[in-house]
Length: 243
Image (cartoon, rainbow, N blue to C red; front, side, top):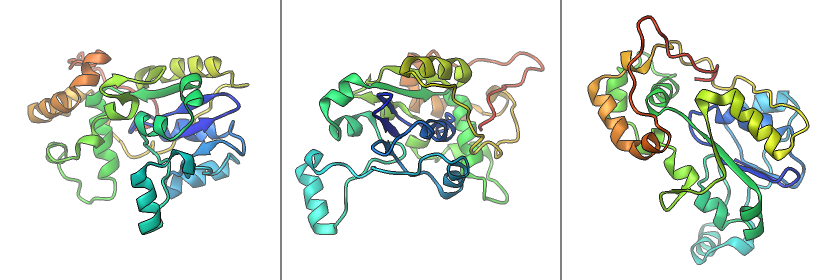
């Protein structure tokens, strides 16, 4: 998650949508006063190797503390912080109104069926043997399958632009132009080596998995027309490099 004051944008990071790669690329254009939240160690090494800005300024200003936040600070010495997948509601409540209202706020979404397969490969990357995908998806936590609560407030999309993972290059170019970056975003391939199969989801997911995804992700399926589609013969479900 990034708040950039020079280019006046807020990037809300969703799960399994090339978010880490986008976040690293955007870090190149951040200054000393911008908010950059931490990512996992292996991805921080990628960011550091590129010479981009490190995590910074992710403690929330005290003026935005609620009574509950003050109690946590006093009782547990726990500061309120912005974090990796912070929601639109949390961000709005922790920054000045003029920033929230005037900055360009954007995020990305992905076909929930394809996203679920990507989540499976990422979450089971260290398991040997991996469980069956149907077994994994039958019990995976709901936030791992749906990004809806990140870019909405009270069930309404609360940001200016939700790009599509399927149109990543086009939508990143639109964002670059919209916020006035001096050059295009070059994405590193963070988390891109864990998914080996690129078969269309209809050949991978069984009826139980499909039904669970349709129930959990019903709002984004309807909002972005991500209804179940059958693959053509011999067609693979090709996507950008990141799994």
